[in-house]
Image (cartoon, rainbow, N blue to C red; front, side, top):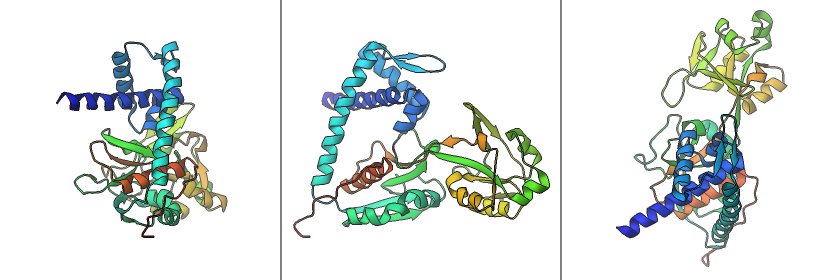
Length: 319
């Protein structure tokens, strides 16, 4: 029992060290939490626990910024080297062991699949030909434990605090758009609050089915607007098609809208207020064992998101 508790405390300490390093590198709790895939409040709790455990203050906190104390700066230097060694050792094992095999059950939304998995699917298969990917496209959030999935993919803002989350895509920018015809007939808002006087084409969130409150941000100031309009969709691409027909203003991911903006089918609305949100994360529950095949897929996607090349694993004698 004592050995189990010692191992559990050691695991928590390593997690807290990782949290501290994320905050130190990001320069903020929000940025550190985004990198680690947890909420800002959870990140703050881990840092407080670490400082209580080591008995020294590691960070200076103000309402505007976070900076390192002398002890925190020294700890950051040592931790960076230690975690770099761990990453290098793990990567060496992954790239030189026999090719992992087995089934990896994945649940993912259509948007996340199109943005994250589809572009690298051929390369992923060529790198790990003995892994069977069992991919389920599902728009609603599911419990990956009860549904027996190995991995889920979800936008960072919807992650459960008990999950281990790995960023596999960039932050995403949301943009409001309208057709040139709508803009000519009704004008365009100069402030998000003016959307209440416009015809807005909304969508229902996957998580709870509630209509989406449009989110904006400018100069660090967030703003949420409960829009109204003649239509609500459960698919944002359908709302955009209605916007192209001149029915109203819609909102979607900027990289999806950019081709239609470039060809003149749509015009941006309130572009200076367009917010950037956390992108897609691969996630699994902390207390679940991860198979070698699942770990290989996660590491592949993580390295691809970071723009790093993946060396193919060694082939087995049977190959």
